[in-house]
Image (cartoon, rainbow, N blue to C red; front, side, top):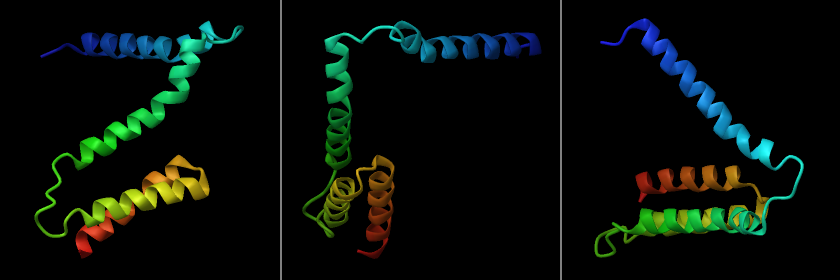
Length: 107
């Protein structure tokens, strides 16, 4: 079992490293523009992550048994429509998730 001093030092060191890693981009790019490659990644990465999550969520879906993926596709469509309408990621994510949970219990 670890001593209280070891636990305290681990927490302090982890906190300092986290503070450094979270603050480093602000320190590095506070006075200059980020490189073009970083701006490209910043622009394209969120849609790629969402597409990956959609594929991951649908990979084990069984189209041969009832409800044939209905709640999944209705919730995905609702999430897309909410995002196009409100332009707010949190509203669209929570709205789609809540709708999916309701549909998966009803259907």
